[in-house]
Image (tube, rainbow, N blue to C red; front, side):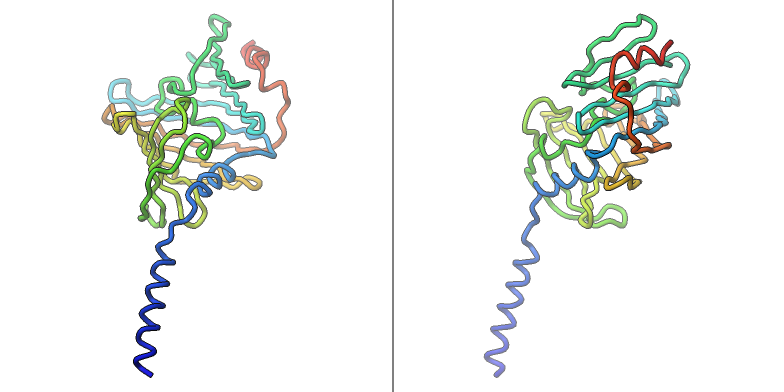
Length: 250
């Protein structure tokens, strides 16, 4: 009897071990990351308070009104504070990003890869999540971040339109929420580290309400963003136009 049970137990242990080590579908995880943080059925608006700490400029505060319409991949960002930048705005539509300067009353082309108004955030940080379309998983491991069990994914860009060609992301095993990201250049240099420590649920979606961007090239430079006044109420079509940005500056 023992001669039969021992081999069966060993085989069962090996089978369970192999099953436990089978990696999940990481492409599916990227899709889930995008899906749950995208407001496909709703418009989204919020007030963003950005605090930037710069070793040369000191501490600067900016208040921005943000509007998104993910189903059309549009967003509008209008600066309300400080007074010297009040009325400056960004509009993304039809794959174009426009910057409006109220002093000259002119629009100029901007880039999703550029920093948002001297902060450590990029313009691309404010559009809907597009990990599945922009990156493939080149490697993975698992670990712990704070109290969360996470997958740590090495991502490689699928095209050159992304802000960073390589990324490393920490994603919760339980619900595929992004907690941390490291952004790298083509040469493998760490450019920026981002943290997403707090989320809020709106409708069927999850959105970070606190974001921290650390500049890895300038020691001591970082930007913290807090979101308040979150809403998924319908927005007028007119908000996502140049005319709206011009009108709020009159």
